[in-house]
Length: 437
Ligand code: 5AD
Ligand code: SF4
Image (cartoon, rainbow, N blue to C red; front, side):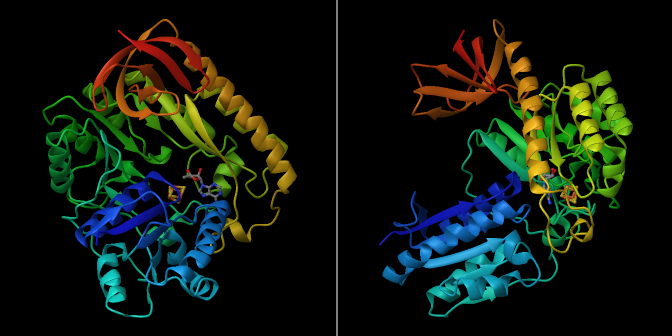
């Protein structure tokens, strides 16, 4: 009988791609994907711990499986990724959810196949967490689920230790894949028909730091030089490492999208210092100026945190001012979440929840108004969309332009994976409505 798997993913793009790696392993074991936990013979939770609500979400979902498992004893439940990688968390998870069969972390994700085999051969439970990261594994076969987009890891881990962030503790020290492996993967994806590649890392700008390999701007140029029509993106850049050379590289090849995600987090120098971000608001604005010098039409998106310990009203106003000055094309906004084990968790002056709530509402309103303003500029113009999907509810195809704006349109034939020009008739907040021309 055909065995089925269902993967539940929380968190960032890195995790989405890790889930594709997990799906590849499950496929090799003879499982095929299904849409619901009820149908599944194995359910894998690929967790995130960057904010408390991501953890709570996972706790809730794992808890809901207790009943299902009681009626379906052969079903395997695996919980992996960032949450169990936190010190002591695997034991907590095991005690709270004794019916979970497999618990693994980020550093041993590539061993999941062995753990499933052990479980299938009768082992009661498999709980394994590695303390530190191992060698980078090459030659995996991720089962990609986002055609025509494909994600390519170029660095793993992070060395920055921003004071609020748990990532360096659960993803380990920064390490980079060899450029020849990245380029070979990119080449093979293009020949398979993928039309948009995104190079992924916590801080792609420090790619290959301290090694004899090429640096990020050259890597970008080399991948862009591969034959074929495709788009090239990258995520995430740390402002402190964003260089003029990178701005020049972006301008050097039309395949590299004019969109940079450059998380600023705060507009207050005092808070940026306490966050250990290693730049000031003025430094950040200077980086944007350099970027725009070479790529004048470059869209910039960002991440912002409100309610960091000690954030005063004045600090928050500085964030609003910076947002106004830069004019981000969109932004992810977060309320600070205290993460045990980080430096900020020990800081005094934690901001009351009501204050953070008020601030986030004001910030979201500002960001949304900027996004709407920028979308409105598209009306009456034509833009090139890479069609990604079909929205069955709306009965429309959708995709993004190079600046990351989502566009919806009608088409008689399936154009997923194709570049289409649409004339924009309407802008609806974050997305555009248009017709093929
Ligand atoms: N609380 C709130 N937001 C956080 N981020 C990282 N850690 C935290 C935290 N403890 C945000 C940052 C980062 C994005 C991926 O998540 O803005 O850029
Ligand atoms: Fe976290 Fe900072 Fe590293 Fe980003 S750069 S993953 S925010 S520690």
